[in-house]
Image 1 (cartoon, rainbow, N blue to C red):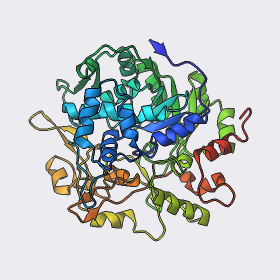
Image 2 (cartoon, rainbow, N blue to C red):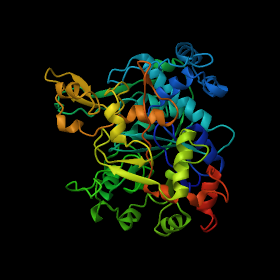
Image 3 (cartoon, rainbow, N blue to C red):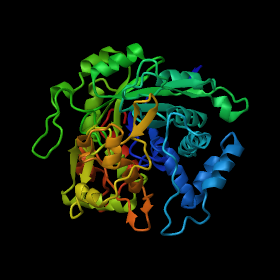
Image 4 (cartoon, helix red, strand yellow):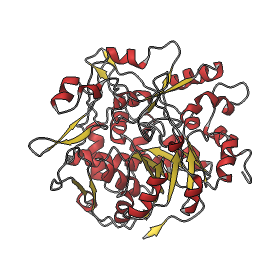
Length: 481
């Protein structure tokens, strides 16, 4: 088995949202000698919407041309590509939601979409590229990881769960061996079959050379989880990203009883702070994240024994990120005006993890937006698998229609305040779904608490900045930066 060698990155660019950390951003950061990371979340949906938009720039086709099984690439192209882009007023063609027994086409999409994203991110440079997944979105893990490894991904980062089985999956995929992953099913019995299996040769149908095993970095928020992963993971854990509650997107829930401040935000305390002395004692590289997007915080992290920092928010709003330009411009205007604000919403996400939401001045609140939205769950990445009374596996989402959710055994109080993050996050990157020719899905922007400090990256007289501005600023005061 071939392991990654070479120096560790000082800066890891966060793998954010759905296609906010897309291939262009990851490639730009990697070209600067730091770790560029693509988001692996919902890449199958992103890929087919790019094709339905006419594949602007021909980038998806260029990535597909490098896929080792041309017949799979050509089949997906023929099915989803729309020359010139779909007509205005026409909704995107939907994919079936993921389920334990995924159809072949959806599995192929996961393989190919991850392959293409990593392939494009690795163009024109020789530096490592990583990919980020949420452990909670389990069903696509196996084909997605395999596709990323086929493309030569060098780091896999994963949070939002306890990814004990991922290191072993990476080990097996280096030789294209079958791998399994246990699906978390609410109410499952010991004898229930929850195992998902992926057999590479079933799809590739040809001999391929061994792959390089990427480094695996677990994203954690507690010392306990770090120790558990090192003791119980079924393969090598190569490092940790220690993410604090000021980071954007999903945050780990506070330890102990949930308490809220006067703005309805989750409160965090000392129990939610990782003991860095204990982390150093584990003798495994770690990076600090959540509020570390400044040169002073990078110096602080290095002094604390970290290999470096992971930075998300600063990269999310730079020119190369996948966030739609109109949202970037509006939010950077608020940063300059000193009115940028982020709220930690304990209810918004169907995962029940606290979720950071940006508040745009003069816009409807997300609560008001969702009062007018038809309540629907047609993407389903955040659905919960559960055992039915007959012993089968079904799926539910607390952001779906309330009556539907309750009919599946969910509690009505769990639906209060829930947002359809899947559709909103695709809107964030310029792929909003149109419903019945009238309703257009609205955005829901997430950011870390460091949003207000992004003006540190703006060149004098400019209202925008680049990934290079971020890296140069962060390294400007570090030893041998």
